Length: 216
Ligand code: ADP
Ligand code: ADP
Ligand code: ZN
Image (cartoon, rainbow, N blue to C red; front, side):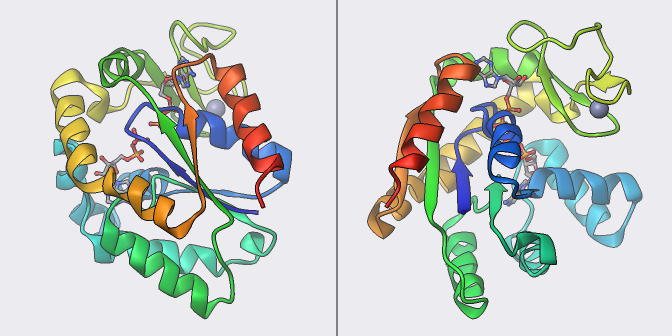
């Protein structure tokens, strides 16, 4: 199963990807996680990406297209993959489709999580991320067992710099301008499933599973 998760920052893409990884045994490809790792390691790509990420703008298409193209060719993608946070622009979607064609693959379904923009600031303000394994939590909606500590691996939880309110507002605008057109794009491809993202984490999970069960 080859999947795309679409939705604004805070919609629940990463949270739902965690379940899909387990259910289908396929890897999550999160461009945000890969870019943050490059920033942390101080690679040339990380240095280039950092300023864009700090301001809440997108990293240039050719950078992310390059990392996704490379990642899709790894062996662990042979049974499927979950794209989380990619594509985010029409040129990225076009490049994805071209790459998949070359690899003799295609996207089976694109899941768009629809949410109230107003709720997203609160979701992102309460988001905490594991500094070691990347697992996501929410102070109110999905708290770790012990405050400030990752339930999965025991490392310290941190707040992402770009989850501060000023940056979040810009990320929402960037989403509306550059990424929202992809909903229409995948409707036209005929593979879009819109799922209400404001329900509880569990309900969203079962609605996604139901949509994928009925996916042609
Ligand atoms: P969220 O999960 O909150 O939507 P991500 O972790 O996906 O955020 O992305 C964080 C930042 O990384 C983005 O604001 C952007 O700067 C950069 N980024 C991630 N994916 C892409 C992409 N596909 N194209 C361009 N920039 C990206
Ligand atoms: P994205 O990857 O789309 O940016 P995340 O999956 O990281 O979003 O979710 C953003 C925050 O909202 C996290 O703190 C997460 O625990 C929380 N969250 C995710 N889905 C829900 C939901 N359905 N209801 C309430 N909180 C949620
Ligand atoms: Zn952890």
